[in-house]
Image 1 (cartoon, rainbow, N blue to C red):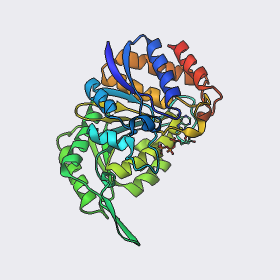
Image 2: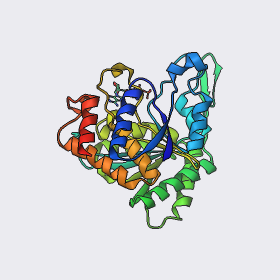
Image 3: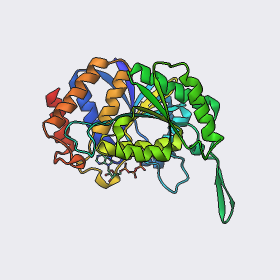
Image 4: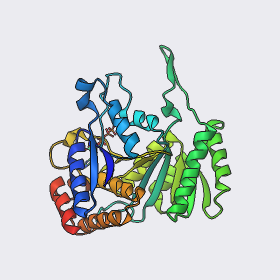
Length: 330
Ligand code: ATP
């Protein structure tokens, strides 16, 4: 039996993790979950929101499913998510955004995969206050990280039978940093003649996305633009409750929803487990459990088609009712 780390998170994390574990168990797939707590709730006992045991568990098991974890604000701790990505060198953040049945949005033809560089850019955290009235943040773009993420995007496109990889920059203004990212994209693209190339500036992309998202396929972006654009694309398919994600590295992978711990609805049996469930489905494909992944995805689609939806996407089902309907449809 395969062992997988489960970081069940805080806020709505434990509720949606519980739903997803029960759905996976009901599918017939046996997984030994190595449950690791993290976040605000463990700080008082362990002195950090990300105890070393969590990283150790992921390193050993190679794959993790992660519910949202809150980094306590104002306590001087670095973001748990950023720390995890850095410590495990999870360089690719992959966020597929595709319309789901019965979730009404402005567009019905969205099928975009956002591939975001996860390790550098303005997120490297190199910033300082020059004096009382000025501060400086340094945007770091390297050839190594840029080529690696562009190659990942093209390989993903090949593997998933996608047609185009579009690179998103602001290379007309950030001529050196985004210029280097673009140069790396062009170089890597030469190795993938079957995949169409496209280059777009991030401001134009945003306008095009809200006018006609169907024109986009796979997008590859440096960290900051990727963060912003992937929330935009999450909005195109129904919001955070349905937006899945994955952080992929060379040695391990962590699958997690885009949303945070939603403390405003914690413990109210209202949270939508879809984003975590779809992240888990991608995780099953990553470990090559394709049949179980397809089976769970079909049961989710059938449930949504039957009109059972949680409140955030226009329905009235509780987390538990929605979970049970998916289990029934398995
Ligand atoms: P973070 O900074 O940790 O990413 P955030 O401030 O962006 O968090 P979220 O915790 O993601 O915010 O929540 C934003 C809004 O979306 C909240 O109103 C929350 O209730 C709602 N939301 C987030 N996830 C879900 C979900 N799975 N089901 C239903 N509503 C959700």
